[in-house]
Image: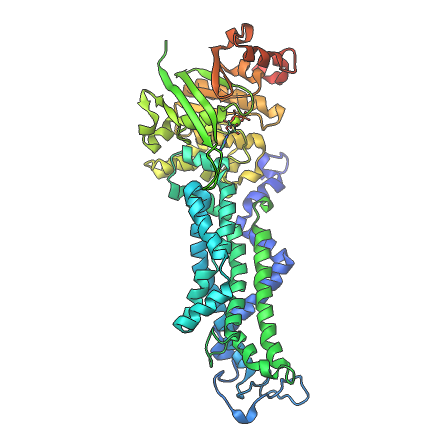
Length: 304
Length: 271
Ligand SMILES: Nc1ncnc2c1ncn2[C@@H]1O[C@H](COP(=O)(O)OP(=O)(O)OP(=O)(O)O)[C@@H](O)[C@H]1O
Ligand SMILES: [Mg+2]
């Protein structure tokens, strides 16, 4: 490049925008988003903890030792490094149970979210795109679903068919699609009225193509935000069901179950419920922080 | 006399306003028995006040809305019997708002490539080249190929919409207020571009506009709509000098500028 003449492509700012890939810009913005970094970071730690649980847990989470029950955590006066977070009423190592409990929470949260996400998105997009009768029927389904109290229905179903982790996942998945459907319906309605959808129709695109390549990319932000909220929702519902004794069954380590098992001792040994409670709180908080962050960072008006 | 390319007969469009199962049906007649012929190679302007059904009629001709009764023929063939992809090669729209007519999630290149993809055009290796040529044709810089719509100005976006409409060389282009969302200085550029493209590619235009100055500059014939009905149809010069229908007279008198030509920028007159 000669320095004597300034040509169009030497203007640095214009060329730089094009040279940097959208992915790079996205990552760049993500790192600068404080809440998202914190939420995503802690969530990543919890994920790794769940994946590598067998290597990280200092003890077998099922190993009970009634002689050593309710040992205090290490920061209490009579705590020991042998059981960093103490032991529960059956002398099982609390830290190991928390670590393995992350597996249960994340698995149930994500699996239930996937099931409800598929159902809710399909219904919501169909209602928003086709309108008319289709919309009327689906709106009726949504209203019907909203009229059912989730916990009560889940309790009734689980009481009838028995409870296991996969039953809990399916019951939750089949129950919590309403927010997906409501949000996807209204965002699809908005996008459907845009002229680029009319243009695609005028170009002869099939309905499937319009939904996949014109509608979906423009509602995926909202979808991701709802998906994170629903993971958190499912995690909390699992904990509630387990707390009520109708979720994951003992001796599986589940945070909700741990709170339930510890509730008898909560005035004498508050950490028995404080520790799984904090874990639950952190997980839900981080998922929500991540969801909000994703919404902020991927907004199209942010792109330049 | 050149051939009739679009022939609409007695087209009626009713919108049903009531929603819900139990409410009584209420109907709004947006287009009320419109008949219209468009000749190959002409520029027909469709004017009329807001809400009189111009966009609705355009959408029916584009095959985007089904009419309630009546029929539309393209090249002598009934519109609803023409396969979707073939219809797309015959008529294409350019919409008013360039901010809503481009998918914000796609690059300019892929927006303009879409018509080729949809048509299942053979020789995908030639696509990029053809897209780039069309970008040249409408005056878009090549570096915009990889940019997103929000990095473009309104006028540039409208050029993208025009490129997308023209890449498959349709016979008819329906421009629904193609310049009213644009800056005054950009309006004339877009209108001149449309005029040049028409000569170069032998296009037929239906131009919907509120701006009578634009109409006088672009159109060879004008059709006036009033409350869903076609009230007058005439050569542009005849209509401007001897408007027949009382609504047309009112329309001409209601222009704020005494000389309609003052409403558009100077560039048009020199072009
Ligand atoms: N989807 C719809 N449902 C019900 N009514 C509609 C719908 N679309 C348009 N209308 C009504 O039909 C009439 C004609 O609308 P149309 O958009 O064709 O007007 P227009 O002549 O293009 O107006 P403008 O110049 O403001 O663009 C209006 O009264 C409008 O309210
Ligand atoms: Mg209109």
